[in-house]
Image (cartoon, rainbow, N blue to C red; front, side, top):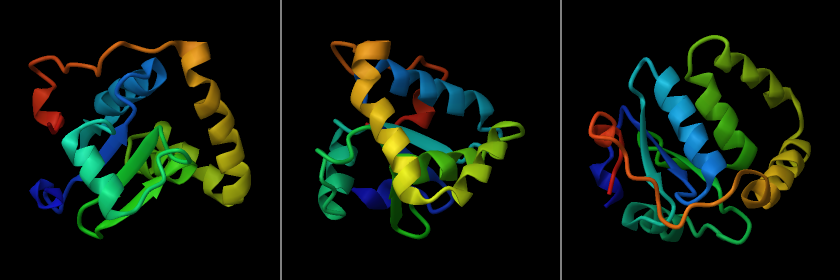
Length: 140
């Protein structure tokens, strides 16, 4: 199933019921001028396939995963967010300056936000349904 992702695309897996995650997806879509990213909820079949293929512990990583099809590689947590930002237009790509911060510090901050995201931003009852204009960017 992972083979359905073209090599020139990157797949962002996100928590489909998280309001913060859904807002982040819309933020990326608006700034993805090179049409590089595809999206799917972690809860989708493709999300589950990637989670299983890469033996991802969903207790530890439950909010964002970036899958680079060309490299057959995944990034998660703060590294995923920064790799995504790197491919967006200015000024979003300036976020890559945080690559200089050690991963354990970046992920501590990331985990703190992720742990509180439902409390701070709320949660949906079901995964986001893309509008007809955005449907081509979503798998599943």
